[in-house]
Image (cartoon, rainbow, N blue to C red; front, side, top):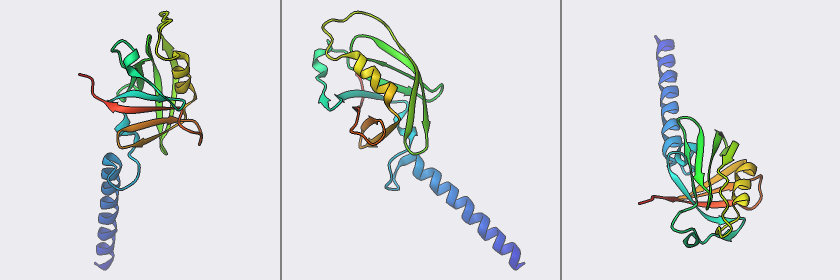
Length: 154
């Protein structure tokens, strides 16, 4: 009887421990950075590129942004003149990789930013940081390649 009680108590602790971990990972209320689930299904608007502030008012009302779709692990966005899309993968430790990125090829001599610089961020990024609605894409431990803000388009 004592053995059965011990086994039941251990099983209850394991189940409760798994449930608590899952909850914390979902909402980020455990004090750690939130998981990859919070960066998907939302729109991220570019605010800084290689440390320089991006003036979104120079893009003819079209915001420079990207979205991660978790259903098919696809990324899509607008780079200032052209749209882009491709694949992404997320791993533990806030690791992110973009692959098979392609973009339209319209000529935009008056573009607000050099789109090739933005697209290079996606090719180089291997990790991200998420803090209070701000997402940074990074490579290694260098300064952020790009900074994005959570946005809601009207």
